[in-house]
Length: 488
Image (cartoon, rainbow, N blue to C red; front, top):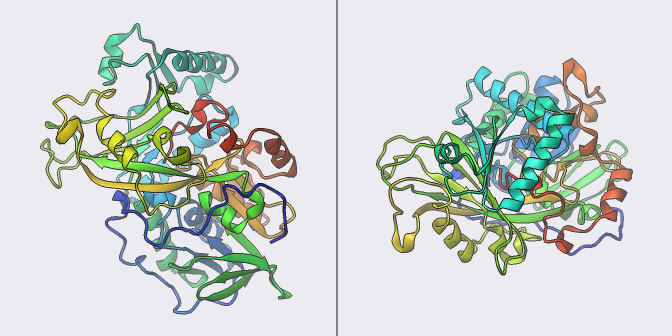
């Protein structure tokens, strides 16, 4: 790659070879497990997609199925299919409606509707549940007042977005109790939210591409094939050469759907997309199991001795029985605790280890603030965890994803940096970048245009670099709400 002078402090390495065991990856799709469409790595392709999570999968789908191109697409995955952030997240899909740019909020709402319709139309077995909403429970008054002020402003400028929100002040204790957060200092309910099994959604997309007569001849998935470097190619038909332990492959166009690992292959983006490690536990709820109709986000000002605010998030798996035994369902997928993590998780790209202090925190600090009824199970007031795992997110220096062709690197495209919030934005971000790779208009077939705030431009890069680096402000630059759904 071309040389650059950007800081290298938080540059990512390759994904860990032996990551922690994610709840979502415990039942791998048999077709995808160890899949290599061809025994040998192809020597060339029209497009190489690096990464097989939600971004890579939907980019390939749009390239080959929706846009019906005849391009030869090779997908390279360092581990098993969907073994990165999408297979290790919190199982949420919730657009951020306030505390963010209105155009981005509208785009996320459209992405949510797209996914909801896709799951229904194709009968995708991914446990998609459209919830009553997402409860943002504030455990400190100043943050709640800040959120209310943002919503008041949004009501004046974008009333349609504001109509997606319900504000519950502390003077309405009955409603807070109904939402099972009776002791919080106020709450915001976002009316659009869902839970799902993310791996199964991606597995459906990938298996369809591998088996459909319309796409299977042009799609080649190579798992357990990490890309160690990208360099200019000497070929007259390809701009870039990708080096892997299994050989090299050349292509005129490459899409990095690599999120937190992007800087490993593009050092010039090291200060713009920073790897951030998150941690999650699948907790067994108390008996009898309380069924939650909402997903939750808990936020508070930094506590004494802490550098960052609380930003914990929860979604519940479907309840199968009311007794919390093996196979009962109802697990509480609870993530967060980053203010206790090493360096707040910033610059941490290894997901092959757990941080014990974060694991204990997650097991012991869900109820309260959430009223689960019953009493806590397990020793020391902790809820037992059936799975505990880590995953690597890509945090953006200006809080927005980076989508498009990299300036001065013709043929290299990026769709990454979701700041822990990829589920309600990645699919249609991938649609936009796929269209541009094929030279198609972004508004084809009535599609909403990718917000300007997400596009990669020299101007945006320069503006972002004029602001503080994530490591200089604890990773919390911008509104606290820029990371409302860590680990989604």
